[in-house]
Length: 501
Image (tube, rainbow, N blue to C red; front, side, top):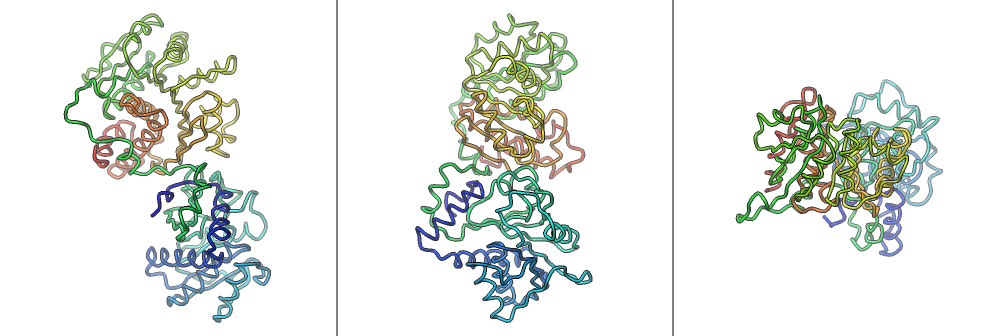
């Protein structure tokens, strides 16, 4: 596997790789199509070994051509195949036309849409629309997708589920809901965020033996899919000759009266993520009791800006926002943190206050990380939540450039974006993490990684990944319904241990 195997591309960038492979490296387009077909058949046979009757739904363009290649190879493997096309296959051009001709030459037939309702299949393969869709699915294709989705058998999407936007992960009116997707040439970023994971299911990738040199130009501006290897690449085992001062000091600021739990979760997550020391700067109302059952946390009662300034004379990484509230006390503490020169993570109420402030005066700063969920992101960009979700990578990048920050846009397929335009997607995590306090845990993790010397982008990427993996570890033992934020903290040592740390 080449070092580009976890890069993320737009549909246009994938077409650029395809073009380079064909025109610069002399690989025939039909040869690539046949390699793609072989990859699909191999995954389908491995994933569904008992499936003896396949339905392959074909549309126009090369995605339909892939379907005909799959059909030909499946028949050669002894599988009973029904091919249905939503267009007259004689209209196909180029490599897709050749794929159809080879299918026909081998005695293959093509059924017309719609199919009889009483037919049954063991596996349905989607080769209808491919990556080029940029508008809502309509007409017969919409009906075919709805019909496919209601079939009792599992579905496998070829390259991408039809109706899913390859760049944004948004459903374009309707989309095939596949159990497996086999994608090729380059990973499409929309498959890993927004609606993508729900519609792609388990994703298999095959680069089709395209030389790495053909990918280089498009890879320069591509994103990155975070994996467990990312943890061990960024973090190394600790030297034996270490002490608590070697791993930084996090100062977590927040926890107005009645919201002590948020800042406590943040602080404990920082401890469980390797920070040498963690201090909570919080409301005097609960400062004396907040650490009673977690004595490793230090606490400072902060009545206002002056007391926080006195604490900031020491060397800290700051995390501000969990349970911060929206009072004058809250605003003054946020302002003090932003005006400091230390590295800073802002979350929760801190983001909402920042959004209000930025409407009056632009706020721009070096060395800080913003961790919004979609609603907070919409406030930061002064827009509506659907606009954020329509293109999550674009939204995260826009926030980064507006504030000079690294941004972690939370949600399905968390996006990490930097002011430079660099971005990563986190494929881990689960709906059980949609619970109060989960974001506070993420803030503590990221702050701890900053304190240990990672750059803002590294800390944001590794923090988002570790948080999501811990959520998956917790869900594996507890299920998703009953998870709470503390379960994510409890699972963190297992994540670091799995990475050899």
